[in-house]
Length: 364
Image (cartoon, rainbow, N blue to C red; front, side, top):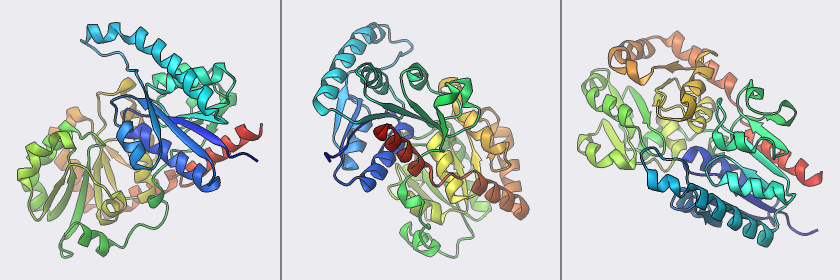
């Protein structure tokens, strides 16, 4: 039997890229002889992250609507036509058995073309509010894997499969020993508690401003910080580094970071939410208000409603943060309640279930 061939498309942000890589890794483990090709948007982060993961990628000349960029927006129809043509060429040359989309600009022309020529297609929606690309593709794919309930608001119910979100494989096993993790970050093991601050793959300006303004508050509460501020904000914040304030543009080994942490402050992108459910460390979500349909707030509220997380909107940070965080630090019952709630919401088998759906498409 000839080896299977898979094309996977997803990008623009880590929230689309890392699920795509996780799905590819699961399929590669099941089918070691399979061939894989990623398709992304030129000049977006997938063009670097996917090759780093060991996969080939081709780029499409595609972008979304950009406010205040009239000339660039005038090019969108031309880019779409060019991307549809290139998608057709890629598909005809590679001849995939299945095409998988995880969201992002490049998914739309690629999967639309794949469906047009009769290639089975599956999409994976990470958020509780469906993205524009996946909504455009809903009538053209065979299966839609989702991480939240009530997604029939956006997709045909007969195509939906509740799977959860794929996460990095190293988080599915036991986390590293905490002392090993503390040594990894050169943290004194006598430190009382460790706060992990995450702003997503690109960083988060408002969270960085909050942390910078509260360094004395964290010191007074005997907290050591692992502060992932994002590459765009590292130059402005690196001078704040101290033995108890570890500032990084990016965290290469997230399993070490999660193992070291006692508490987490994080954006509520879909990937972060899914990972934090697995590691089950008490978390305060600060959703980004600058995302489509405010989907980060909806992601966070899904856990808040399950008594699994705390959420503070950006607009309330200045007046609410210390009071909310004081309660979290000092209330052991609340900490246990949040931890138990996160574990209930975890979906450790998500990647495997998605791969099962891909295999069903091949067999059908």
